[in-house]
Length: 244
Image (cartoon, rainbow, N blue to C red; front, side):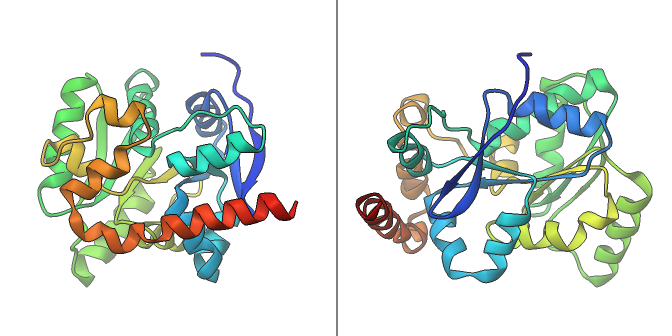
């Protein structure tokens, strides 16, 4: 791996961290026993972070905020930053790929019943030696939640991936990271659905041309309400640049 360094920038006043080797930086942190929370930000989340004080606090308190969305990357490039998009699903999987040779274990939380288990099984086939300290779906009752927290505290998995959707997963991580203070926590949205084979990720052409959002809208038309934040993001970006 190339040397891992982090540069700090901002999008609409919110922090974003730039690097050509996020995985190396994160693995160095795990190796050193430094607890780390990762947020993958897109245009929708940036606008929401402006409007929601709790989400803004989470974003400002995260150890690493990665530019996931195409809009965020274009915003950065317009301001002179040569940063590529880093999809959260790719970042999380690249970290998982590092676990077997380091003898670290992962934990999955979120998704519908059975989805996380199927995702874990398929990933273990892809990366022989990948081990899981636990897998929990996102519909636990109070007793199961209490048991999950006890197991997290005792198992201390190195990597904890939470797929509860934005911003619920970010709030959950913020509230529970104390259970594993030396672990890496990443909110992964619907990645378990993709890894399990339940849903398909956008074809490569869409991803390469910053149109993955359009394919997701085709798969899940209800997302149009959430994506209505995109015009606001573009307007705010232009206004901010003109005023400066």
